[in-house]
Image 1 (cartoon, rainbow, N blue to C red):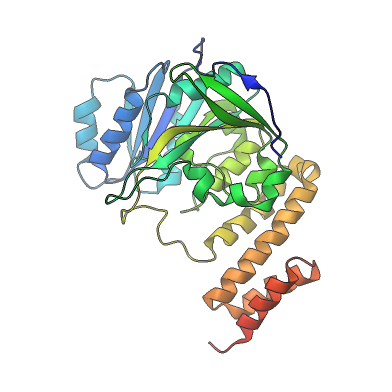
Image 2 (cartoon, rainbow, N blue to C red):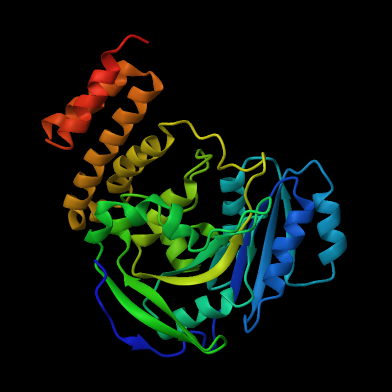
Length: 344
């Protein structure tokens, strides 16, 4: 749980930092990808950067546009692959990365000018950090004001009761370039993120060694792959989350992967994670046994409710009975059980 902490001086100090590799997967988004790349090239006090654009089998003019615009820029590398999805494209980028740090940016989003400087400064000040995450906002859509503090507003992990189990230290960071102070949480995020997604990939900067230990993105996942990945990443060591707007997210287009999730999709991914993590990282079952058990019963409850609402009544009852036997949210489980017994 976050505790009041001390004030910390400038977090954007640039020292002899390792190169930052920025991975941008794209598919049929030439103009948007240019915007994303340019937002990285426009970074101030960014240090050494390479940009790896993985063209995921685009059938429009994406490759032509990118090679024409950036062909002479040695910082930008365009790789064209078959259309196997964003997770596969990110994995290609990870394998190509030469930096000691790595970051991810979706092709339809963009970074704010000091995102790299702020994230790099945290790695310099706290050498034990394996990842740094920056907040974001939504770009205006049809005249609607953008949402600030995007992750803390819409990512479910921040509001979950399990968030209080994470041993996080609250601090205040001074940013020289803005002459301002921002709040930061630092420590072990696994007990929080295992209950619900916390971080956007667009604001996530990590040590390449930690990404190698965590493992690549699950290529079978079409959605919630960022949550599954950042949960594994948080097992590799302490992280930091800054309430600083480091990225701006575009929304509302039909080609976005985040649209059209099945109602039980969140719980299905959650159950997969909770069964897979102890097998893949046996030490986490020992260190986080109670956390994993609590998260599992909650995931079963979420799955039972989603299946009951979605008409899969028989399967819903199996999950709900498990929760009742564990005395978890018995009243709500009984409501869902009643719903599952009603005629379709």
